[in-house]
Image (cartoon, rainbow over the protein chains, first blue to last red):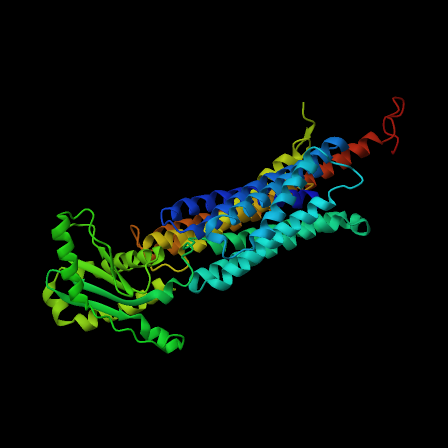
Length: 375
Length: 169
């Protein structure tokens, strides 16, 4: 029994193509899911989807060209199409990076230059290919584009915190492993000295690529979505109010954490108290005479008050968040708080007497839940 | 149309079939990995137990497939193929047993560990049959070998002289 290495690495290569397509579909699904949040930074999920989808197609062409076509002209054509597709994938990613939400993170001039070079490279590969020059310039431009995308991701990782930070970091590590695999599987076998041992490099490379893709899958599984940068710095106070009986069920001062962390020393005193907000909300409801479009944002002096209600128009509970500056991420955060609070205490909240007697004890546990949401 | 030999499989279809089977192994492993990610931080619920047990089930199938592949594509003799195949079966049975046991540990279905007991009895019978089958095939091969040897020796025996039908006497 002698196992040929080709029979071991080719299935792994085909599997990585399948895994690539799966990742592309998964990223597209994630993008669709987070699109309704209207946070532009989530467009990087779309960039990933394109990169993996087009990358997988390119990989398919490269595998067919390298292992299944024996006619040298056709094989070269397939490889050229494969490389140009890869270049196309990088170009799409760079064009997405040029969109408005990423402008603060990138150097748009560099991205524009690399995009133009990638475009030229695609035209060269498909129509103006010159054999003596070969694939080297295209590879080099692709490498620059890919390196810039990695640099952008490193910046994104640095700017995020908590779960999102660890997930993005995991994805980045996965990509690094993937690239190492690609280098082992397709870079080293082309060096003439190592040509004899190419089967071993294909074998190691194909499995390292799969490992990298699995790490990326692991990093992005149930991906929480990207929120705006520094949104947490705008949090001031959270209140959960029983609007019918007019008392505070739960409150949380975010300045406390910042004081402990030592990066925020200004104690901000809100001139409006939480019960006062109920009054304001009622006044607005009376004016508008509608419960469908209830007021959700109140601008007051230097700060903003965000309100969140239950789905039922006659709802009893009001969720109030005092913030420095209104941001979409803060509204999403308040919505998450509402869902978690109602999920945790919906049974108890029906019994007013118990809640009234043991309010402090019952809701003190929500601090941990809140911390988890913040992470 | 396709030049094809069976066991070990060779010819035109060898590589495509081998790739498909390996990809199936990888897909089973991937599904196990995805299920693991889904349940790793979840609380104790029956559905989670079933999912956790399903991870074992998928691992069992993928490992069995690996043995199938080695049996079909790389084993030269009937006996070696049989041994490799049966190791795959037994591995699947053991992990299947763990799968049933894990579910029954959480919830009693009809009687306590009833299905685990039934399954372990059948597994035991299968193990016995596995060794019997190996013995049987080994004996058959030995018998065939002896018979071939005898036939060969008969073919190479000196021709019988009609005048002297008993030359050794």
